[in-house]
Image (spheres, helix red, strand yellow):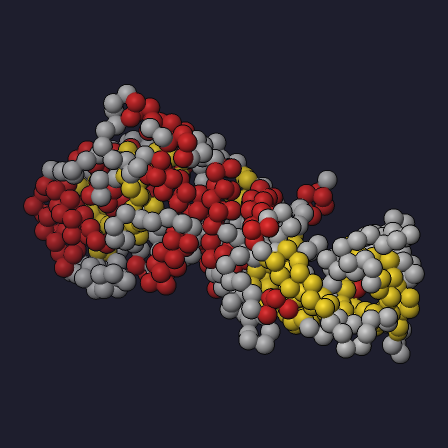
Length: 558
Ligand code: ATP
Ligand code: MG
């Protein structure tokens, strides 16, 4: 078995390896990723996707994509399309066609009938409130429903009538007959079917009864010959029910449920319900807002599929849980982009520089590497002209000690270009600095100046041959480490008001007039920035800041 070489190790992989070694598992390994189409996928789902597809890949098996679509009111085709797009973008290919739990509604109905015939399920007419009361508590056993001993024939007829639409929403349910005294509340005659007059995105108005998740899931797994049904820890207490269902109906195989800890990430939330609130209440610009921890938001922000998969490998899979630092995710994207992102220069807050000794109508074309450590990525052409822009923050009239940038009568090198010395500061009527008049040294292209030393290197663009752009400087969406831990308060109160700073009128070098759509750029000395296809217009490109060059949050904390 080559699992080791292909995949970061985790306890589930080890468990399957051992079963294979001991001859307890023969045949193909089949897993599934089973999202409910009631929202967009987030980084927590990415962990589950990497795990399920990764396990299948490691054992040359298969992973299905199955929509767990038993709550029609909350689900939609928009979510289905988004989820398919995200799984594909992450780099995974599901086996065969996309599947839907609703594909199995007929089969699930027949299995319910089988349970009734075996005396293992009954139609219960208690109201929801009564049922809660009969259920008991963690400390006290529940009580049997007065409808528990309905004869099989009556149950069959009532269940058929439920399906035929003879009863209203909530009037009756089908329940498993297990044990009202079980210490595991999930086994106290759980509901298998409920009445819901709701149109379904796949089955339209065919059904007015829908099976519950706990009944649907084991059956769907078995019908797909899933061998390992991986789910998050909150389903551990449901496993006895999962096994009970499979033990009492005639399914072709017995999948095994294994639980792992869900991913929690600090400074964000990973709950579809809460993310939906941010969208519905307009706290962000939709599910794919670049600040959202959704796969589509991260894609728009400039995250690469590789960085997300690396992150999932880094955090591993276990039963212990805990919270992962957002810094790890940012580290993963920085590392990936550091080796792959093309370099470019962008001046965020332009300050005009005139090279007083440069001929008025002369221009030169400088050839700079796309990536300084990777010559295979080629070169780019950057025009050098009499007027340039540098960043306002790279000039100080009264520089602090050890200033590494430009100041009066001091010299800096312009990245990839010449060395220049500032000779004059020009102000407007209100005293604001509007221009620097500098002298360039024609003998310094690629060579150190003779007899003096520049302070440092700053980035720049031509003032007359560059592109006007807008920059979205994104930061973390929340300024609280665990925005939803506060049970009294509302997580929305912890939104970071500085999570988006819009800069207009930044300037990028000419080569970015037609920017790449596939990878962010490293804007030298600034960070990584990704072209936003949605916000850009032909005349004004918009770039989203993916991540800064260094982790400023770690510094702020220490
Ligand atoms: P949410 O609470 O965000 O709605 P969910 O579990 O209800 O999540 P599903 O669509 O049912 O969402 O999830 C599909 C799969 O992804 C499930 O197997 C689920 O266990 C897994 N999953 C969801 N959230 C996480 C997470 N934070 N970490 C790891 N796996 C997750
Ligand atoms: Mg769920």
